[in-house]
Amino acid sequence: MSATIALIGRPNVGKSTLFNRILRKNLAIAHDTPGVTRDRILGRTALAGIEIDFIDTGGMVVGEDNAPGNGLTGQGFEKEILQQAGDAMAESDALLLVVDGREGLNPLDEEAAALARDSGKPVLLVVNKVDGSELEEQALAEFYSLGFEMITVSASHGYNLYALRDRIARLAMDYGQAESEQDELEKGLRIALLGKPNAGKSSIINAIIGEHRLIVSDVAGTTRDAVDVSFDVAEQRYTFVDTAGVRRKANIKESLERFSVVRSLKSSRKANVTVMVVDATEGLTRQDKRLLEFLIREKTPFMLVINKIDLIPRADDHMLREAVNRELRFASHVPVLYTSALKKRGVRKLLPLAEKIVAECALRVSTGLLNRTMSEVVEKHQAPVVRRKRPKFFYMTQADAEVPTFVFFVNDHTIIKENYARYLENALRKMLGIEAAPLDIIFRSSHEKRKSEPKRGIKAFGGAGPKDKGSIKKGSVKEEAGAKKTGGKAKAKRSPKTRQNKKR
Image 1 (cartoon, rainbow, N blue to C red):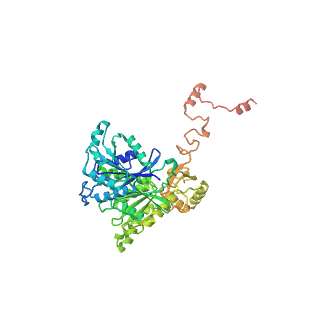
Image 2: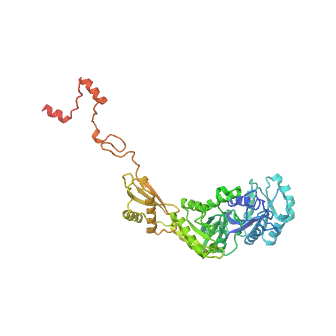
Image 3: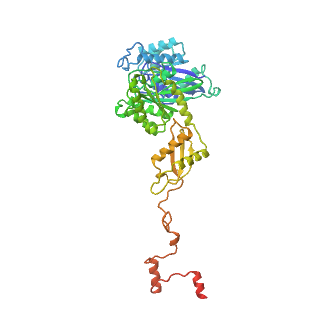
């Protein structure tokens, strides 16, 4: 078992920066704006051989207005953030209470300390934003009244982080197990959710796991970080990565949202399967089509989920499905699910479909079977003639890639048309049983392309042909030189056989 430690505190004390420093990874967005972190973020690392799960929480504010635009941070999620922090404290073995050493003791720090004390968990008070040892005494003076063991650090500048990691390792020793004694952790299946803001990504995760794990709101842009949610189903580990909503670049005005969008796209590349969520009431918008093109171009294993289907009248349901199929005609392999996270309709099909996509991505085919398949496919429908030449297929192999990738070796890859490449892809999908996973086809010439076409008496690379060897063109320099020596016409050279016959 690994130890679990949560970072708690009021807004804007540097919890996310400290979280990233401890893990040596940029998992949480760190920004000067208060209230950036809302959902609790999970990260794992090993300190002194002890596996530790760290939980970064949002800034705790007690008794503030929860309406959008109100509250201490102006975000309107104080109540939900406080509930998320409370759940994190309940799950943890120990707590890191982070405070701001520059501003000193704040009433919100006292409220956070009271909540930490009521939890009954061991608490280490981390006084952040202390940039050197000469500032420690002044920074610690006001926090002695809280009655916790204290340590000073600077998450931004790295001061005293080694001592903090050692102290955390000793704190976790009673709860964690040494890495060498622990069985290798099964990472499980990572599923990233991608889509526009307010499409229902967090609601789908909550509906599948059966608990209110992520903050759900009608306000677009509620989720900002890429939040990991792990759970087990029938001894199989799954990890959902809830990402921030992706909007058009022209609509992104805040630098904070720009960070969130970039992180969302990176999360889709690192996940095993990506779930693109679309709001059924809006249909496939221009931005959704751009995301589709991005996922298809990157050969990302993904499925399309049309959420909020309960808000569509039955008379318009058929029209919606036809519109989606029409937009996906260029990528007919993409599986589509119609769900309602609120009513929990269709969400149970998501995990089996993700397993199917991963299984198809892991498909490996022997070279012999591939070449028999290639011969059958090419003989059934030959490639069209281009520039008076027909493509000739020699053999094919499967490349070692994350998605099924097949390499065709041909005489000239530049004359293969796109529609024939699409025919080969569809034929391979049918014969190999690849229905939902992306498939990549690469064409390579088996030898270097010749610089010029072969002509009579001229070699392929422009040299003299066999018929031209030893011949002298009329009016050439050699003919004029021979004429000067003989005083007239240049004598042709006689072969050895001709001279022997003359002697006889």
